[in-house]
Length: 352
Image 1 (cartoon, rainbow, N blue to C red):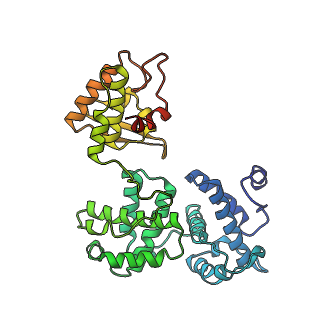
Image 2: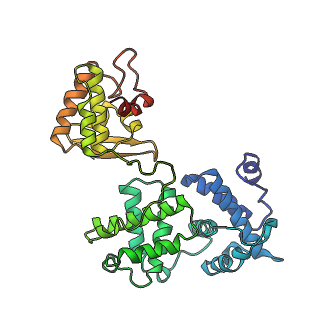
Image 3: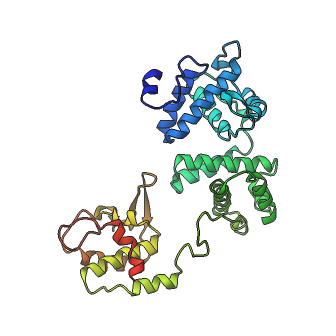
């Protein structure tokens, strides 16, 4: 299996004869099933081979001998001063912990290692798992994003030591939270810093939804801009949205269609591709539900049709704009009946 996978471009070198080479190959396939990109799979697999090479020395090491203490010793003593593969010391292997964490989890899933004992479960595990379940099932984030947020929030809870109860966490001041973020993000780039900020913001937002007063900490951490014209607003104000909607001419079929699409974007905060992909069967009038397919995560989410004015506008605009039944809710008025192009939707604000 390894040789075939090598020639298919999955791996950087032959791992069959290496220590933990077979395990590294199985880890790559496991990561592919979890949705990790090719570059991450290669780095994680190479790190497992690297780990086995260091442990082996003159003797071969069995996978049954691996545990958390061995991995922590490797990360603490070898990685900072690593000169393997003719690389200078100090090369950053920031992904080493994540790679070996997946390696350890795979060995436990396969039964090579015993499951983690209950006594070894950290006290913050329940809080962390609840937040990750919220990200995955309620917010619909991708597996990779949830894993990234988990790492940052775990570091924060470890930093708090024994003060990990929600009541103690919400009593923190904005200065204390910013001090941790500055220490944790001292060597992070702009993108990683923003992930750290979003992870902590989401965590405190989740605590606020659970009934704890945490709104005062949601704006404690600033995001870093990665583009020019950072003073340009990220979104239109509601008064500007009302002016855009009022500028649409609803006398014709195309005008009523455009108004309905803009109304959906303004009301539900949908992407243009989500509005464009909306079908008539996605609208459940009896249950007052709207099913949205998110192409970014490959999942569907259901939104309530609770505002009566939005439902009346939908009935008036969509049904009158589609005199003949089509699969798509929004299609071109002229022939043929094909979905609207994304470029035509994104250009509407400039026209109005």
